[in-house]
Amino acid sequence: MALVREPRTSPIVPSYGESSLADLSASVLASLTGDAVANVLGLPETARACLLLVDGLGLELLRAHQAAAPFLAELAFNSRPLTAGAPSTTVTSIASVGTGLPPAEHGMLGYQVAVPGTGRLLNGLHWSKDVDPVAWQPHPTIFERAREAGVAAVHVAPGAFKHSGLTKAALRGADYRDANSLGALAAMTCDALAESDRALVCAYHGDLDGCGHGYGVSSSAWVNQLAHVDRLAEQIAAGLPYGTAMYVTADHGMVDVGPDDRIDVDAQDTPLRDGVALLGGEARFRHVYTEPGAADDVLATWREVLGDRAWVASREEALKYGWFGPVDALVSDAIAARIGDVVAACTSTWAIVATKAEPHEAALLGMHGSLTSAEQLVPMLTPTVRLAGPPREQGPGKPASAILGHRTARSYWAGDRTDR
Image 1 (cartoon, rainbow, N blue to C red):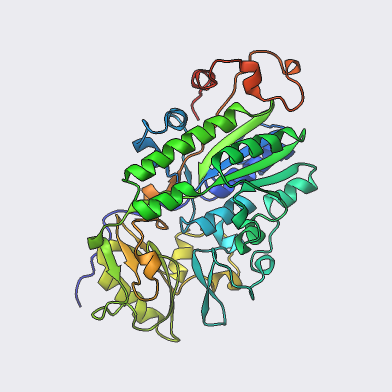
Image 2 (image 1 turned 90 degrees about the vertical axis):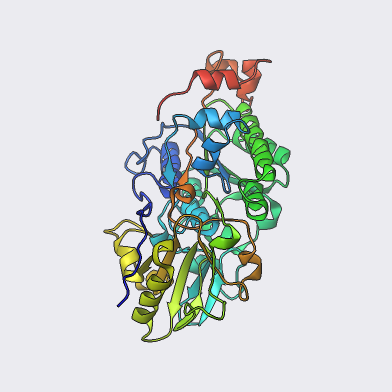
């Protein structure tokens, strides 16, 4: 038997229960309701909280492009990193943020996952009409829990996503407000915060991710878009009402995948389709659903063919390793069935593409989903406004920038940075 090559590095296993995206949103909610047990990040209690989620803003990417994003880079210098979760992709991370739960519990386990017992895949971004989003993800969202606690809950994002299956599954309970430009996103976020004495407002920006997919994260187009994101964050921070805590994070990072780093499962000379009934996930993180009785053979084949280009595990191993949730967590049979019989997470900048079945996805330049630090590590940035006077000097809903006067708020945040 030939010696199977193994990855030279270990995967970044998400820190569920300690410092993951799910822990951030759960802690933000807890900081509003005073639930010290659920506040695992130890966030300060507050009356209003703003969570800005920038799609694709990996921590390593931000630190590598400080000149393009001086405001965010300043905050990132001593910031606390979070892990996105597995897979490191939008569907899963939005659900983790929206529910405050790890993937193994909320069940949104990737871009494409099997609908158990149907022989087909559910695309989490292009939802099937015959799959009920609430039945697929039945746990209460942080927005529903906030409203039950008397906290206003608002989600500000492009109108195109308002009625999507992902929104209904992971973000229901929020007052959804359409914002189709950066200026509108900043203004509407601050307005929503000013409307209530107690509020949870989540703002979502997705263009950075799209730019990375289309042009690559090493492109000038991506860097230019990052500069716009930096300005967006600064504008929101400058418009925060008094008593608001702001957190900036991302759903995942991204890597560029070159033409020589693509392993095509649809190529004629590959055995990677042998014994495979459905191929789910995405190019950097694959759920492989096997034909009856073929799981062991498929696992052995994928390990041999991929070698050190991917961490390949059985479903049971992936759960035991803590990829989808805490290692000691009980995972229901219904959720486990959505995980591939074989799971493959790519190392370095490799990708497992399907040029015939997924021509659009296979052509992307920037990709994500795996367990590398570039994809897993996301920022937790906390702009802090030092007010020039006591709270009574500010009228209801009046932004902090009005007190700061004509001086830029950046100088105040830079001077008020603390180690986290």
